[in-house]
Image (cartoon, rainbow, N blue to C red; front, top):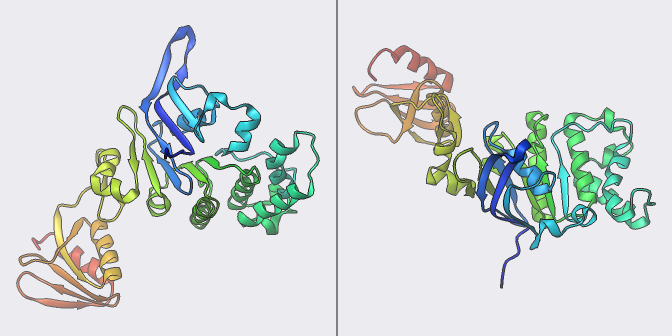
Length: 339
């Protein structure tokens, strides 16, 4: 049985048609597959072409070559009305719909079914209320959009896309204007909607930590090289992240899933309680050392609990520490000594 992907591209070229028949190619030969029930995160540095790819998949700008298929059908076969029933789009720009209520904004998602001047029927209102509830913004239904926080406004825009009842949702930087709590809430919401509603959700983001934590699939995009696609874990363990994000003075650490300013070369051994060891390692990296397995001939830290650390020196001395702050102070004292 042939599997139908929500979005599938073959040999896709993206970019811009310039005057005089010239073209500016941003990326070519893209073979991508978007799967229902998953959140796919599109990652890349500024200028990599993330927004260009999303606009091309939306049909907002023509491809330079290749094929795009939505739910098994060529994108070119979709009328504007049928496209609106298939793909919901949430752009990064802040909406200017401040003069209408949240309910009225979300009701715009029903226009593909009612027509621009159509009247909302009972079923439409039920779907609007369900979308507000699913997006966690029902308690603000009667508020004006202008009264919302950035996080609430983003939830309202997601509710509008849900009201369209589309199998595919594309979002351009949905967490761009949000604080850390709202970013997490938005990603948790999108993941739940993908799983519960079997929707295919594609979003562009610069939030590496959240993408690794919440993305079922990642697309790593950079000019001049093939797109790397896969689960976060497979991409990290294959070295794809190190290849894509390592720049001069900045490296990706596969042990922590984070970008660091440089790769420490001096090692300090760490063992013991997992949670304590992880955060001790975080402090070591920040202070210029690499956490490693315990071995003779180096400083080793045994993590018995967050308030009981034991530093074992190469000469056999042992020192008990009560906090990571005390460990950092110890490292500072020994920084000029070969430890």
